[in-house]
Image (cartoon, rainbow, N blue to C red; front, side):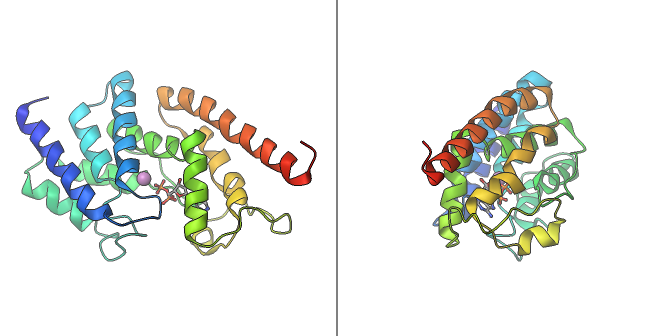
Length: 215
Ligand code: ADP
Ligand code: NI
């Protein structure tokens, strides 16, 4: 990576830090840095461009709908950054950012390998031990119950239904987290996802056994 590229990445980190100050919805700076780290690891195995992968990862949530609803459609924070720093083929980075989000069943396979690395990295951060912690942190921030045997998970939701649906945090595992391992688009992401999926399922089994008092 050139010095110029490294300095652009530092600037992107600063923009993300400013955007996430004070947020508790799970879209914090630490999430962004983990995604950037994992995306770089995948990029190396997949032969993706490390600079463009890390840049897309650092910017992937700065226009997120939950944090910044007014810029979510046009990705104006990310777009302004790419323009200001004269990043070549900014459109493909914006496409990668747009393609990252998973909402119900209408998610897309990213159009670039860099986008695939960022999408897999973002999904991996919702899995494993960190994914469990994030799910309960998010559920708590929305006043959700951890679990309620009366409220069944709803599967096969489209994007709009998924966003409107009020559920429990444990149902989120069935509605989203258990589906992620089959939605990885890189070979390295798929491998890591297998392991993290086992962690999720082991946790849910244990949780339900403890709830019923049989363990
Ligand atoms: P992403 O960063 O992939 O766009 P989201 O914005 O959907 O993810 O969610 C951020 C984090 O909050 C993820 O770890 C996700 O699993 C968790 N989360 C999202 N919706 C819920 C929910 N309804 N219940 C529990 N956790 C949730
Ligand atoms: Ni994210």
